[in-house]
Amino acid sequence: MILGIDASNIRAGGGLTHLKAILENGNPINQGFTKVIVWSNNQTLQQLPTVDWLEKQSHPHLNKSSIWCFFFQIFYLKTIAVQNKCSVIFAPGGTFVSIFLPFVTMSQNMLPFEYQESKHYNFAMRVRLFILFFTQSFSFKRASGMIFLTQYAQNFISKKIKIQSNKTIKIPHGVSAQFQLAPRIQCPASDFNSHHLFEFLYVSYVTIYKHHWNIAQAVCELHQEGYPIKVTLIGSTLDSFEKVQNVLNNFSNASECVTYIPGLPHQQLIQHYHQANAFVFGSSCENMPIILIEAMSAGLPIISSNAGPMPEVLGDAGLYFNPRQVSEIKEAMVQIFENQNLRIQLSQKSFAKTLDYTWQNCANNTFQFLYQVAQKNETKIE
Image 1 (cartoon, rainbow, N blue to C red):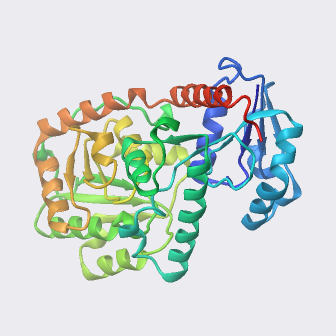
Image 2 (image 1 turned 135 degrees about the horizontal axis):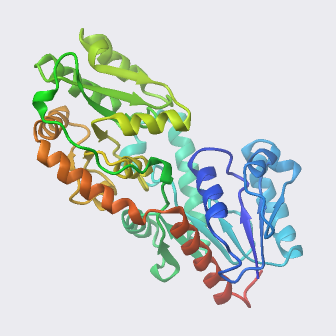
């Protein structure tokens, strides 16, 4: 059997990370496939591994804007897939509008489905999210197989658009082993002072549902109250940075306790994970919180938003807060700062939970599921 992968809409970010990881860490030959063909733009294809069983194909439309990728799916992909004798197509980008069957797709973005989060964006962004809701709902309903990353996402989306449970599976992403560091010795609160601040780390791009401004405000208020703490915010800005800037402007001590870094190379980012004292995660909309799992893997004690799949992933290995309530964020920060034993217990628990989040597990389970779908629909190729 031959597996086709439609990566026409994968250019960067988490989608590219996932695609590279499953191709680097899995072997579809062991699962029953004879070859894998990936269709994408030249830049994406260049970043994929070179192995005997992988064939990389591009098309002029795939090297243009996103609308041309839709044209490729609609008018070209079925013919190309049939000519290459593909038994199934995997569309990890979520949206798949080709008439080829069978295909498997994957949900990686909750924002189009969570109106309580998307309603806070401007009109243009809401229109874009509505279009994504329509195209992904259409794709998910038609799919022969559906991969979800968390039980939360599976339950939420399946209920919202009525997806049959017998064609779904939960396969979480993996985390790079480079983040992994066993929990360190935790210092008592008395070891920290105005010259040696307890550092919270928050890694995430700045956008509305990440609530960076509330995290910054909580730290500024606690610092004013005499707590020797600070926060380092790392991530590029998509929108809403003015909210963060307003907080920084309103607190005279902000420069002493809040550091914002727009973005860092991978290795430098890992260093921040390994040097921080604790991690704070303030997002209220996630499909699978990879950044949270990276922090767990880095052996950090964690305080986290109580929204979405975060309690599913972190379980009893963290403290929780409502990311919209500064008072709750402050309470969790004080508790984790003051309680050395709690930090030890939580970091050990969270680190242990991450050992199964490997890209090898993700890749093997993904190729196995794709082969099962191909076998089940062997006589239904259209």
